[in-house]
Image (cartoon, rainbow, N blue to C red):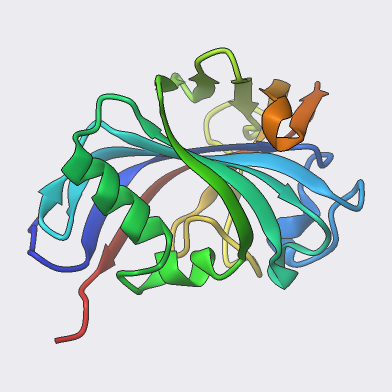
Length: 210
């Protein structure tokens, strides 16, 4: 992937799980099943750079409470960045996801009404044989598995949806065997089994205007 000193060029995997039933209505612009959506969106950077800063191998996770329709915004969130990120990498990832660099990540950033904290944490983000697992220390844990065609040969995908956390990339419809979040200091505590999950292989490229 060609790297520039502006914007971002990122490729990686997404793991996402929430309190909605399968399939989450947020992705097609409808209200969440429980009225409020409790979720995480976890991005792992297999390769790429932000403002010319290499962020390969790092992860960014936002843990959210969404009080209604996903497109209405007002998300309340805590953000986590891999604890082995340098200060330069940490600042680059934070700036990209706060929308300072523009592009599709800026479109996502406007949905956040309140970011309560941006923290370093040990993040384990794994995809193996189609299954995903996310762990953030002792505070977030989830395991998920994708739906497939009847013969198991292909993964069920969602495309051209009203909302996407990975614009331009297909999402793999999945189910979370469990989803647990324990952040009482931010009033973000929940536990679900058999709820919605989404996985994706994604790519985002954006060059800042001169």
